[in-house]
Amino acid sequence: MMLANAPVVWLGERMTRLVPLTVVHRVSAAIFMDLGVWALLA
Image 1 (cartoon, helix red, strand yellow):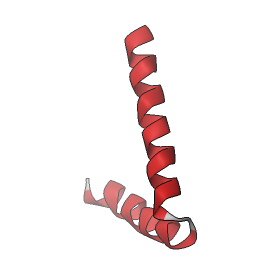
Image 2 (cartoon, rainbow, N blue to C red):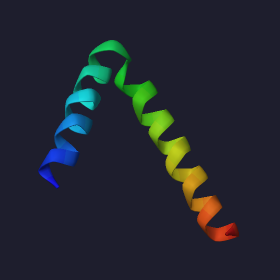
Image 3 (cartoon, rainbow, N blue to C red):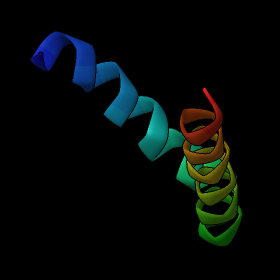
Image 4 (tube, one colour):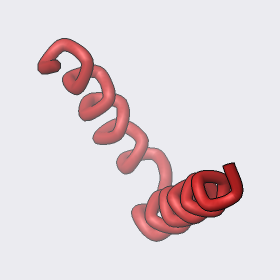
């Protein structure tokens, strides 16, 4: 599990350096909401 999580944490940390944190939060919220709607409809 550590091998799978390490690259994601590293890329996420780099992304927050390039993109403002509010944008990261909004995009994450939109993806989470889309997945929730998809799960309800599937």
